Image (cartoon, rainbow, N blue to C red):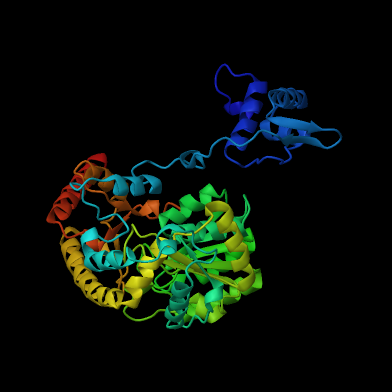
Length: 474
């Protein structure tokens, strides 16, 4: 913004003040940050130095900034409550990731949710959960009513260590910390390792809540194109050189939203680049148990030196039973445990006891065996229903719950989503997952939520309407 873009009626001084307030509101200037020099800001705003002096003095009088003799002006105002929707360019609400999540979470039973990211409740092992709850009701007082330990339930951490070893990740229980979810795990790692303004790499496309979470941490988010075998390593190297990021957050196993699988060659190249750049990698393994054949794990190749491995049971067991975990190097686990106490004190011991019971009695293993077969059938059926209406998978995933699909040429997924929403169907348009906004022609389908024939009738009608509008515009 410069003086030439000032709104009618605004003085040059108030225009300069508004520019500074905007930078503070969007956190490009944080408390304690030094403002541009009077000379530099006068040049940037195309105004006189006296105008900038007056603006700075008035902001100082308001308490928004403060002057330091011989040093300049610094931000002094406390931060206003964070509004994620106001940070950066405002997306159309039909494709905003937080909007998609809220519509899916708040939807009534009449709403179909092929765009959501979880299994239907009826697909979860409800009978086994009820049995475990009955058993747990007879547990000791501490299990039912006391805080968990800083690292979490020791027997569950030992069991998780054994499960991770099946993927080549050798980690002792002392290097595992339980969390309330995979999202909390990433949040804690971000609190621990990054500061506002730090650059963080994500895949493009990637799970859209990574964008929202990183915006909440006021990070600079940088996207790297994701291919059928992992991130584009040439562009990954370029992003490392240009932005010097602190973290790279990605999926292990089955990628969200594409369903792609990381190849060993790409994994080795990414780790080599990370080592050269001093980059930490956060590997989200939340879809591990959907795999039929194990994919490479960055944490296995790296030995948890610069990779932090996380997961949870929200997608496979129950979204109501909040239990996730972090595996990391010993000194980081200590710091993360302190941070967890500071932010949430004790852990969810009851949830951890419930997950442990389900993992130990064999019911979870049987559930997952049946679930993988059911998902394979749903994947084939969903693809077969989408193909006749011109919606085709961009990648044929080996397993999992997602189909990343390309729409017919020239069709905007956001327009299809708006049409579907009016019919009580929540879709997930591609640009909600894409930092570069280059996925407008894609939709992500959750095959477990895509059985109802109304979905395909509405999609077909929406595609016809979009095509007709396109013809009319031409």
